[in-house]
Length: 111
Image 1 (cartoon, rainbow, N blue to C red):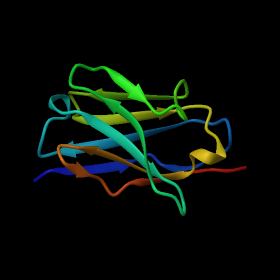
Image 2 (image 1 turned 45 degrees about the vertical axis):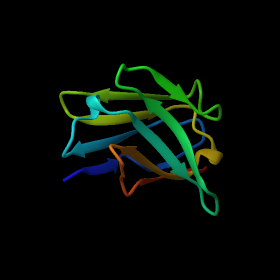
Image 3 (image 1 turned 180 degrees about the vertical axis):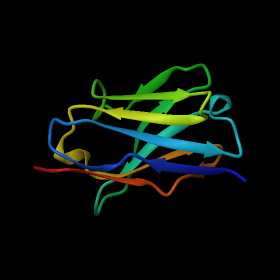
């Protein structure tokens, strides 16, 4: 059974950092393209970042240079390192892959 479980969200001040994790089960993350998405209050789902099977990465313009996607094959886990956080980064962040998406983890950026 494919399952994705996010963690690592929380409340952080502007300029701060968080690292989100996405633990996968039922499949191997290194064998699939994996994505991070986010949904801010009252807004639609926004694509954030992608890591390809090759390891190549891509980012939305809004997070480029601040966020870094990675994976740990030994832990079968996807990560999103978020630096220089802004209030507009406040959203529920979820990971997706192999046709599934997790429930998400809340990130709130506020002073």
